[in-house]
Length: 302
Image 1: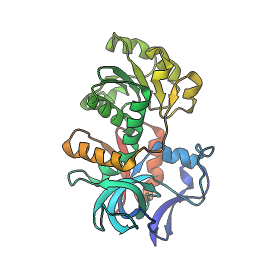
Image 2: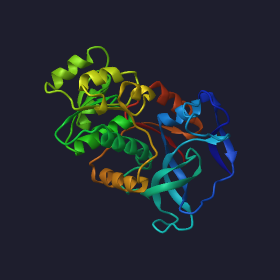
Image 3: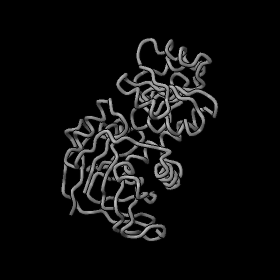
């Protein structure tokens, strides 16, 4: 038996409960890990609230968490690239638990913490997909609305690695953080169009909405072309002619391996804003849902 987070109905954070359940076992092409950390993502609480019910079926009782890190303790048929005892991170299911299944993974570098590794898969996949889909290239300028959270952190750094100039919006207290990532910071809210013109007199070539704060029409006015505006959080983006980007991940194992290399070399960094124990998963989701996170939240296990 093991401890895990489950929810038995759609609802607010209070539907989450810490339970004792049987440990999962691997199928072909899977590994099980003793979980050391699990990433906290907005998709977790959106799924818990039922926002995805039109296109994603949830069977109750349902577990929580789609990314994490830990030590391999069971290897499925057909797996040849890892062994019991290896430290890995990646995508999986029901990872907010003492043991969990990974479906796609990479070896965790020794100089990358379990907490950072656990927070990499989702934000990296979201960021790379958004950059590929929004149509912004080397030498161009990108506006990122909500640039200081986990996905924004990834978009800024991966865009800069592609030679793209990034203007990022965040509250004033997070501007030094954005500068550290390589972005030109500005505040959100009234007057954004004017501030962007001041920072980028030649204009911006594309915009990505991370926050989902109803800003799509304004981003279209700033960019001048809805086909170069994309949201990863606002389902209404397509109503305005903009793009909405969503999973599933593309080549997730290769993605994780690439991010492991970038983190190990120091080319990509991830700030862990807070790490919660497993029995505070509800509080972790409340913080995630309230916004204002700088970098990533994780749940630490073991």
